[in-house]
Image (tube, one colour):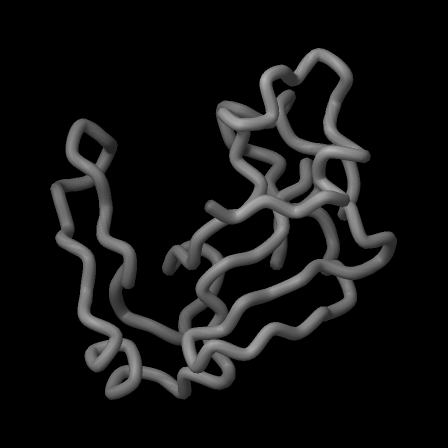
Length: 118
């Protein structure tokens, strides 16, 4: 559903097919403290108990939606500890920037942070 053409250009060479790859990361409370919960929920069989997805109205009432991102470009510098690190580009695919989709539906770019940060 979401696919960035730049991701395909900069992906590691062994990653095929592109249809099965993760191009974007979703907001997690480990990335930011804007929300006291994981808006997309937490899947079962992980290290934490199941948390169901939250309604967008909950996100709006808990944080400023224009300042809280929902999706971000993935790269190894920003996600150094993920188990599927070899499947994502080594550096941000938009040069020194990452693209963010915010909960109020706007899209913006921000300068890529240091390793392990978004």
